[in-house]
Length: 270
Length: 315
Image (cartoon, rainbow over all chains, first blue to last red; front, side):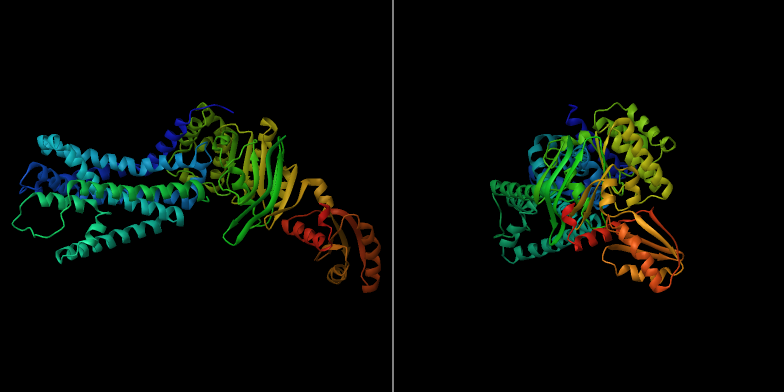
């Protein structure tokens, strides 16, 4: 048997997926939307923050608002209409006829669908931060990284769910619809949970923070400042608790993706 | 040497049994046909052989390896599917060059296979702009680009017009002659397989009903038919259907085509004049072997008759 590199087929599948996912002008449009979404809201940053660390957290929250939604759209499109459509139409059969393990094929496809979108998003966001507040960005880079981590886990979770649905149902379009419904359902639940917090019921908030850990991180930073609008008695996690919520949310994300890998590797009948 | 060995394979999708105790061997250098009606389990069998599906039961070895656990044997296997799907936004030549890199072949091979499959004119076209026939040719180019020693094709001609079908079959024969490539080709079109295959396995309901050399199998199944020219084809056909050893009778305007169990043609020669006398029909002639099986349904009806007669164990 010819002995050839195992890395080369992986790179070729990855590059083919890139070419399909980001054909001109998709990447250019999304890069513009990221940049536009980032800079248009930059001026509304957390100007009333009492410390630079809280300011850094607030600024990241402001900058990520619209671009995270744009990121989600791009990831969904890549997962549902890229990988999902490959499975639905049968293009995946062609890729699976190459000398590659199934999990390697999925990794190459996900690296294109998720990895490149994330890199583009983070690249533009960090560029904006260094441009707008270079000193705070340098000094509080840990806080900034943590806020991004807390902000992105829910998007990755939803991407994982859409992927799982696309794999199981072999219907990219349906997976996308479920993803959109889920997104709006979670938004509604999030509002209800916030309302319950004000009535003194913390448990739904804590449970929801496992999916949206930025809620826990936000409560932690809110607890650091003495706001005239603050309400005593609201749950305020410690820093380690907030970290645990972020960690737990990524464990959930990892489990969903693990499920996708197991399904793709062992169960997917092409 | 057997390139493919499948023993007692079984695969179900929920309650639907797709493959049920299938055993198969494909010898090196052979063109083997896998024939059966839709739903016979051909595609599932092929997917198991390619390592795309895992069987519920049984053992399969391709190049003496388990295809499910060894994707690297695909360096030696080319695949052609019934419907070829490729990344739509790649250009024909560009994508083939990419496949060359995947299999560690020089990029110049892409142009070679385009020439071989007569796709030179489509060189710069987007894959999505190819017609069904061209797409199937592209699938062949894609399957042979790494010079595999085994090509597995699942209904490769199903979506092609007669001319494109003929071209594709010629191409398969050419490859077989030039490269000594082994083929496993599934189809439900018997004449197609009879044109190119040296051996055949007949599948139905997830099992191989019969397998072997094409000629031998035809003879075993009573594939040759007898043509009786008469002025009362309808009445004669009705009478012939009553005979136990007759498998199939088809009447047309000028006569009757009759298929009987192998070795029982003599009985037919004796019985036809007697029946004709009884129904007052004129017999213009009786010719043996003038018609052959034209479709899977012929084979199926013969097999069913054999099974009914309890003779199928002889296969």
